[in-house]
Length: 235
Ligand SMILES: *Cc1c(COP(=O)(O)O)cnc(C)c1O
Image (cartoon, rainbow, N blue to C red):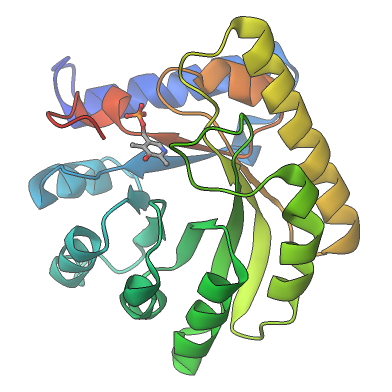
């Protein structure tokens, strides 16, 4: 425990408290919400600080950077790595070999390659289907209307375990637009659960929309800036 306001430990404690408060507002158990620390562009020293503060799940967007960090962190036994960035098909092998989770599957081809390239001894790769909920040109993800077919495909891949869905709602959405996007995602998540028993994860909410996402049933929030500070690049 530290009281240095700039430290990662301090910032993590603040985010944890924010999650607890947001959950209690809507009578949810804070334990049902996982905090994913998004460490993209941030150095290994910061990841180690977060780890020492008790953080175990980390999210990376770029394959090369992520794999490099994973290889540097082999002494951190129970650390869990999530790939959350757009996936190019020539990068699936590195993802399948090194990560524990993938949030950004948006087509059969990527699912098939990850399934084929996942080393059996690593156990199934946990995967989420990315939904482009606000139908933005610039974002990866499928429409909700395509979810059922892709989920069915993934459920037949023996080296993948379908755990749920992920979305990044539009940053410039109005409050009512944001609410309806979160609500649509929650509904899709509930429906998916009825047909796919391993589904338990709704990955939505970032530094700026954490509270609203939790109010709408998020089970995993992806937080970068609020823990590690602003990033220099726009990404
Ligand atoms: C960068 C990123 C985040 C973290 O965003 P912050 O606003 O820094 O909390 C979350 N999810 C995805 C997919 C990201 O690319």
